[in-house]
Length: 319
Length: 301
Image (cartoon, rainbow over all chains, first blue to last red; front, top):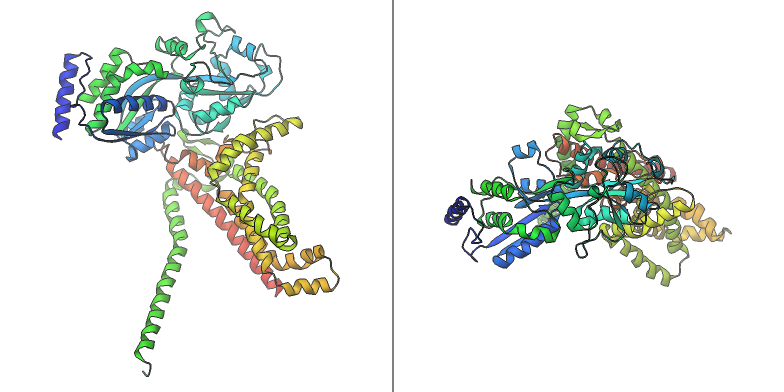
């Protein structure tokens, strides 16, 4: 208890002084305990990276992370099965009523993906998809063959893929199309990696992935066998230079950060707890993420929060 | 009482032990009832909200709008299980007949442990095998016949399921066939029947009830199988219209969503109802099998 008070006081001093020096709200090295985190695939790679860095500073803290979709993260944190849930969609009011307490930690986006060996890959890449075409693929099911899209001369069916688990990627993608996950048509596949794999194996397939499952972490290029389908934002039937930012992961994260990629499918990612966390190690971890953790976002393929946004989230911690 | 003390004590022990064992047996029988009652109580909210027939026969599945039509999932389950049974039953029967009647001892003793091993493979491993092997294969095979499918479909799920229930059906069927008394085989053979005629007309007739029970056991197993199926079935919320359509069986629905949609009203109640439907279907299968068995036993006598 004393330590929490101390931590809060220190954190208070810290925010009011409004500088970003790294002193950590709690005295070095005496943090102990286990933080369990579960939920969104989208945030998983980032959380793993953060946990690594945080443990370097506080070797006494163990952080267990498992991915299983945003729905699972929310359920686990509300039921107390996990300290923090990873959430890759906006929080529902009913969840807030149940005591969910979210902290925005980083940004990313969902992108449409197709198979690199698509019979008309070049056409697809140069014309992209408009929002309406996405709606006709995933919601109304009006587009059944590739030939129904202008510019294609092939009569092959489109294999539309979606997610079978309750997840933020689907929710965000559906939101972009003005609907909810339950309205998305298509073959349901479990998990982010699962969906990427399904599209990689199906030349006629089209799906959507979180940025970090669509791009390879090592090379930063789109995953082997995957092609990122550009969005035709001005709907002129082709991808103009200012709409073309899918070449590698850095390009797309820049576009997300600068708001050139629309939101949704760009979105904030949250860590959620049930009520404000009481344990010092959890608070310290969240605070570290908002201060120093942001520096690792870029290299992990995410977009850091703006300074103001991070400050706003920090205030939540110290209230 | 003229009994020596020790005998009396033994008798007492005996009665106590019998009582305790009887209680345990009754308790384990009660578990099914307890589970069913628990599920029912949990599904009351949705049953109050909507009629059972509209839940079972509507295809509108939009939980956020409060529409819970289970028909696509029920149809998905029936299609997938049906496909698995059509594939598995003939193969299993022929295998079991060979192992029980024709196979030399060496082969029988060598093959059976391998088949039993199939039962020990975790279902998620079957699922991965389905995704890596069966799905692409079904996609290719459908292509040869001029059909286009992603491979995530009823047929793939049926194939994976069929392999999963092989050991259940084969193991039991072999046991049952071995239990048929040797004398009646000899009687039939001595009348000049061939081995196949003997099996068909005598052995299988005698063992029919048991074989049916084995098949029903496989059916129940298939109907409830979750992980492997949800990995390959395609999970699209539509009633399948053919073997190459994706299906979304009930267990997959529960596994995908239970505990994840807490924020949607009635959702968990709908999930409980799904569990209840599953339990109900499996119970009905088993009761039907029992009834058929009883009929057959009467006929034979």
